[in-house]
Length: 79
Image 1 (tube, helix red, strand yellow):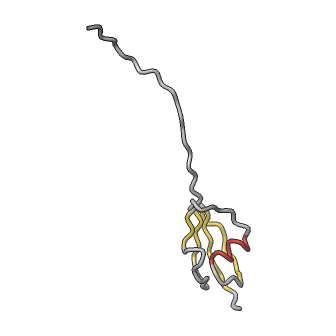
Image 2 (image 1 turned 135 degrees about the vertical axis):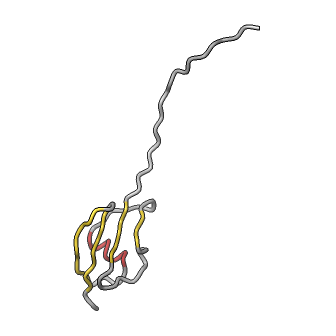
Image 3 (image 1 turned 45 degrees about the horizontal axis):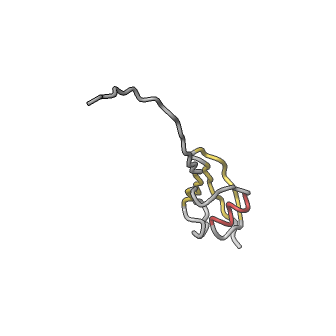
């Protein structure tokens, strides 16, 4: 196993430089206790081989539905 130094970013903000013996990006994220789901973007992919000097990015994607009611003025026509 080879120790690698990796720069990590979370949501576009520089997080920290970490050293790890992880083989893949996903292993590193698990080691760091990073929380993510299937909507989030991980670059490079979780299955990518972790390399010394690599930059790993995790961007959380949040989906929201907003509902609102609005009165729309109208005129009634009588024929």
